[in-house]
Length: 416
Image (tube, rainbow, N blue to C red; front, side):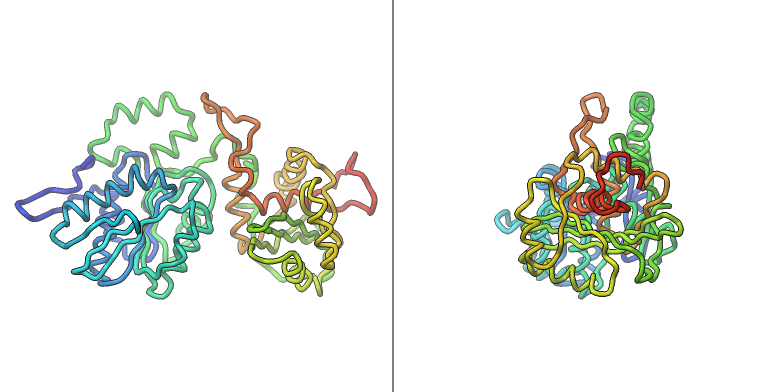
């Protein structure tokens, strides 16, 4: 193996983890995340950690999840088959391609192999432990991480996450920050690519010379950094606050993004004394009629001072009419241009006039992953990456266009 993790002594196997792998191996925390540089021995370590959990927990189901199906085919599956179906073949492990499982009848155990960009595939298993590879990638979203936790909840199963950092989304806010804040359930182990004894120091030095600083820190040192192209790069930890009882008299602004499978709402409250806004509620839901979505929103608003509802693109007239028919006076956006709406959000985020309750994990994750595509030179383009997946941020764009505006006012010259 690349980092000489495995040694064969006759028919026996001995593991020789390097210092970073050993730290993760020895951790007794429930959620252990190895956030490290490229080629540092993350993926080779994962199957052995999962095997030990099977030894410890016994018969049942286990999960091995990676970010995309391509990564599953190219990285996770070959390593899982090498460890379980070749090295540990005496235990009876067999890969069943049709079901995407590795199963041992003698152990009465199976490993369910899935990719995070199809999170519905994670909803059918009750598992005892999970290995998540490349869980820091953009395609491994918060909903997949939450789905994994649901699958493990019955057995309070453990998790190993192995990844290079790619953005400032849920891995940063829901794992790294919680560990750094002293949460006893979490352990983060970080190390450079060169922790792998087989990684050439010369290659590390070459990458340091040629790559932008942020990219080198993330991809070779395993440190979080602010990537190029982040649209809300001014959104920082200081924009996230602990929840508090919002005074009922504070004006509220509700933004909605429509969709059959992903209808999102965000709720802002205005502290007029300090001239700041708090995003205190969010939702992202599907499988409901417009009337059902509207009923939930109206129930929330029943005792709150909602002064404006805004939602949808300019063209989504029918959806607004449906919400109005359901009892919600939904307004169209003042600005049809996406970039104009983004500017309005930035004008609140950057001077710390917009704060988000830390319970609104979905939109915090979106703030940390909303970015422009990069060109071949690593420079941001005008195109927003995976734009159609950021439903809460779209709802926020609609809401902020209406805050502080007197009825009938145009946006021209409005300072908020």
